[in-house]
Length: 410
Image 1: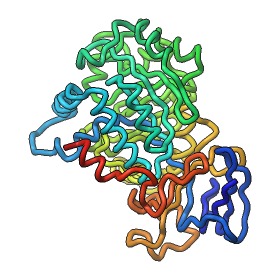
Image 2 (image 1 turned 90 degrees about the vertical axis):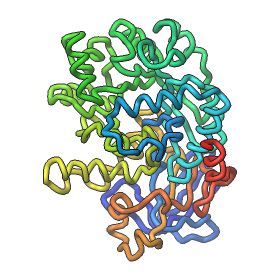
Image 3 (image 1 turned 60 degrees about the vertical axis):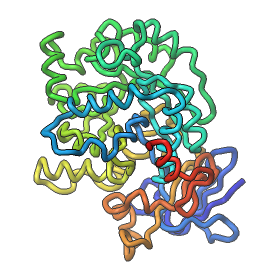
Image 4 (image 1 turned 45 degrees about the vertical axis):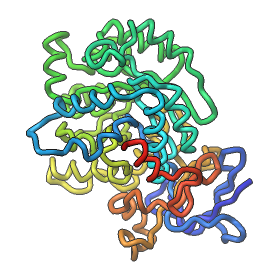
């Protein structure tokens, strides 16, 4: 048993609690109580549940800073640059980029990543996450039309046969994805949805990221992308609509009524000029294209972008946004026992220093809001997964992350 003493800990309420002892045994939280540090491992600042990155394309870390030249471009011109990078990947390069990227996520306090994989280097992704020490839900995407040939399975049945043979592990679970209604026709989407339902797997899809996507779908099928997916049996309490940037009010209500999730990725959505997403259903967050890996930025951007859109402050509280980045993200990725500091939960948590330049002088009662609205990934001090420290003092226990990123992306 390992015991951690938290200077402050967020246990789900409106304010953090001071002086909290967390006892961990067999990868779970065995007890949570107030107490003195004694010989426990001391965690500085505010300890929060592990962060869930609910939507990631790890290989796109290779695009950071390389697509910003003035060009009057759009999502569609960016996509051509993404395709060029994807075409250059083999399993070894995919592994190197993903291992370094997942290492960067660990440094940022991310303990679980949902890797939405359409390059289909599955074994490389699994090894990379294991090496970085974080949990992963491998969200294998069915992709049949458009894009690169390397993304394609022969048909939805071939996709199901391939994905059905993938192994899980203690820190790795599986989920299904319909890449988008552009890439998967309705009949094939129904096959994927049925496959996921039979196994109780999460099911994710890119939905309504661009107005052109909605227009093309309506012209082809007479329905919005979400309606197409709903008619295919995809929309349920296990479903996550990624982006949902251009939902109609009816689609937003439909998602809420189904008890489904929406995953907003604000840093990517603004980088690609997608638009401002409005949360629908249960909110989760993702780093998507890795333009930045910082879940605090993703969380506060939901509220701050909403302020720009509505001219109203305070729609989402710090506690609500942090819940989206932790417990709700874990649930959407098929780990309902994680994302919270509670007895019986997975022993995944991170501490954020409050004595750096960003947060120095923060009063304890305001520590939660200060972290959500002002902290950065670099303020993360310690990261624990399954009761084991994978980051301490802002340094990864086994990876030289900066050096691996430089080598993988050169």
